[in-house]
Length: 322
Ligand code: 13P
Ligand code: SF4
Image (cartoon, rainbow, N blue to C red; front, side, top):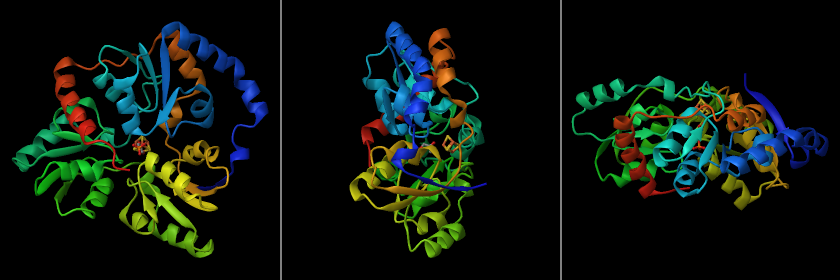
């Protein structure tokens, strides 16, 4: 169930904890050097990974650009499987490792390439915009991908009156509320964000003196209606840095507040937050093992990769919105 936590910068990674982790961090650093590898970590990684092991941190879009830009030979993707696949799509010559193959995503599990082919038959000529939280096979059937940081810009970049949007219905509804483009939805959702409710947010706002609320667009519409800002994990971090509120309620995965607290020490994070069991499969220990054994290497069938890469590349040309 949703848990309430309060985070301050001083609570995250106390010195004794860092000292205990140091041997593992030293070994990860030694292996990174030996393999010419980097660790790219999503904003939902635990603070030990985010602050001590990662060479780069960011949202899904930042991690997709990183694969194009790094000159490392090996990328350890500390995130979920679709992020590692996107990195491999954009950098096929590099070795991309995911420390645990079970690090999936409820959205990616919700739709197949066959589902997208059927949607295209049902709506002939209507372009398909697909959230990056999907398999390469689903991306290969799509015209363009998007992330939560550019979904609206991607939809509007097509210059068409109607799009099919897969698989996140809440992100799709949020986009539909911001544009004149008609959006055909698919019924997928994120198991972490769908659990927030508008009612609980209104209750918190009433009890906590109208606290500022920022939310990820994978949340249901009544939650987004109650929010003062809606954006990707990158957008939320920047919003806090820009506005420096004394207190903020950040509606997303639990590790986010831990990770941004250090850069925003004057802000107290009050959060009903939910853990993503997929993101939490990645640990310092399996990052070390991954570098040591060079597993698990992400491979994508070439026929799928060519088409999926096109859909991702079109999105990267649109760029970031938040
Ligand atoms: P971002 O692209 O906003 O980082 O979100 C990815 C994700 O999986 C959110 O649940
Ligand atoms: Fe997927 Fe939701 Fe986890 Fe993100 S938080 S990886 S969308 S299940």
